[in-house]
Amino acid sequence: MGIPWLDALVGSWWLYPALYLLVVADAFLVVIPGEIAVSALGALAVATDPRALWLVIPVAAAGALTGDLACYAIGRSVGLDRWRWQREGRTRAAIDRFRVIVDRRTAVLVFTARYIPFARIAVNLCVGAARLPLARYLPLAAIAGLCWALFQAGVGTAFGAIFRGQPLLAVVCSVVAALVLGVLVDRVVAVARAARARRAERS
Figure 1 (cartoon, helix red, strand yellow):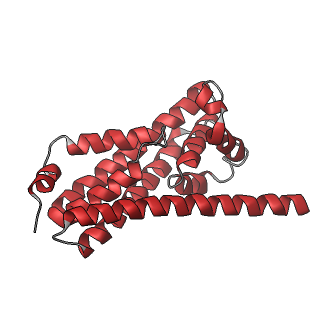
Figure 2: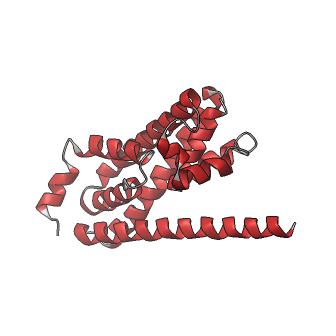
Figure 3: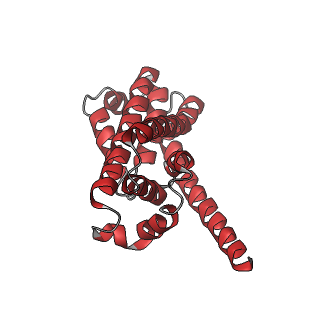
């Protein structure tokens, strides 16, 4: 049984521009819940109007590409330490890690970093600062953004299919799942980093 206001939300003209802007902002501000929004809308689309999923995915992918291109442009034009947010905290630590390997592992970094907020910012800044040609970077960023959008929407789609006819429950479950996945990714990255540090100390 549908919920009228959720059905109306999926059909709202402003929803998809808002999703696009949210995902673009998520490229710079990790407190913006871009992943959660895409998963939630994926769940909502499947639970209410599956046709809407074919808008959620390309809009999210376009927002991801736009945000990543903007970070690339910042790195290319102003470098890696012009602004305070580039010089402090986890963004600075991530920049220091990635700047030395970005030339050798560009494709791997662009693809994997899309799923890790601070790494995503740092990698795109470093790729821009390294002056990787746009013709090489653009296809990588576009494919990475599309894969990310498909994955995030897929998380929501799974719950939308499970709880078809219960859109609110599907959205809540997809949000929780997106949060848990984010925490797990963060944890895996931290463990891998600690393991590399221990190996470096022993060598």
